[in-house]
Image (tube, rainbow, N blue to C red; front, side, top):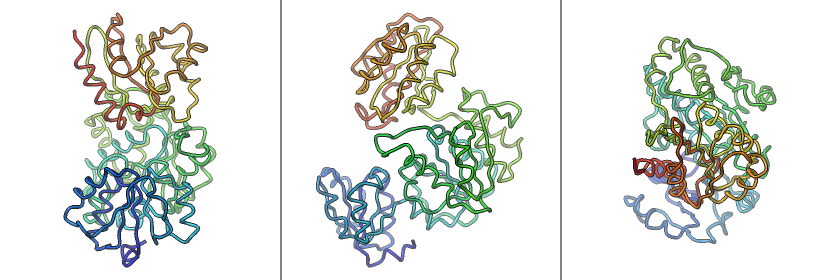
Length: 436
């Protein structure tokens, strides 16, 4: 789709927020005038008018619980990732002839530069972060980082030159209806996730695999072979395939600031991207040694009262919490819980039974986890709390010299927090306020 294809058409933006504010500004700047913003939240009217104040009067809004009632009135709909592609109202509009599009699809259409896209269940944020920093240090062209992590791509789309490189971290919701693939695609391990939003594991996997489905022989698919799915997907793409693993020793000396085998896995994915773009290993190593780990991912916070505190708030599923637990050989107080996304927690609870001294469980899914612990982790000390503040206080009260407190929720954050970032920041502040 070209921007000219939108001229004179009735265009709807379905869902307004972080993922669509920049897109709306871009469309209005390009004189797409018959534009309507739809959102369930009526209170967003003030935010919308504030964000778009220079274009006031050049757009319409439909807000409230009935915002999806008349989607077929529009010729083109841009859905936010928060609106499932297979939602009944979206599919009804599609059958009526409405074109269903997304910010990600439009960016793939308009971006003049080569795209490196990263997806997966675990490690896609850190892998994107590593790729960006290595390439930024060593290439003469401009390197951009966007998607779920970094800037919104429509904040800088007009600046991008043909020779530049754009790195996108993409979720299953952004990939679900994608019909183009990136020049270089990185698939980190894919495990069951978002079962609260996808109808099946197969649907979730198929969304992720759109990233490589449309590649050509000139493209590259970098696939983590530590995932069982890697064996099934290697025939899906025509691209040149490179497989990587946490077991590979691609360089001499890995950066010590990235702890755990899962981070070695992330580093190896990034190294393979850099090698495709002819960055020498010595330069890759030099860049890696300078890169700081991302916040909320096994982030060391402080040492107080004989215990080290680690913030792993971005662990929103059991597998990433297991990976975090495996990074340490000391006594661990684990704080976990939140919103269940349809996970099977048995594997995590069995790990808790083997490696965790005390488990502090809070959040919406606490009864589910506690019930499993009573069956599979009987020897682990169990404390049940109502909220994170109470959990941190309980952790501080435990006498555990030369041990650590690992906040790795294995759950989504939406029961008590706006997002995982807010949850992590809250944990860090609570820990810093702990009395010594």
